[in-house]
Length: 99
Image 1 (cartoon, rainbow, N blue to C red):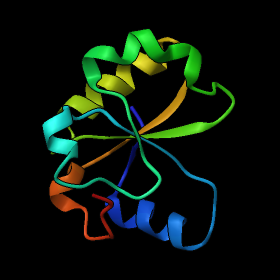
Image 2 (image 1 turned 60 degrees about the vertical axis):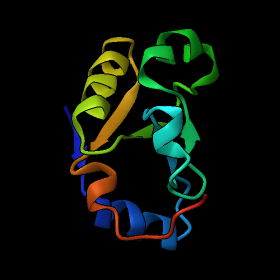
Image 3 (image 1 turned 135 degrees about the vertical axis):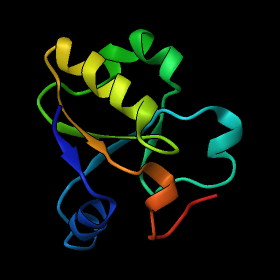
């Protein structure tokens, strides 16, 4: 599984490189704030939203600490998607938050 550090995600966003971020946390976790521009698809609902995820792009998976997003990354890789797991998750995110 490919990984990416929160600092690298932040750097990509600041350099205006198009970044697709999928936040797989639950609704109540996302209500506390998420990365601006991220898309929220709870882990349990991911299989129902595959047709909404562009298979031609790289996607960065995010959760609270990196565990659930790791599972999401493995699942999406098995489906042929190009994904990276953000290690440390939102606990290590130092950038802006959208509430």
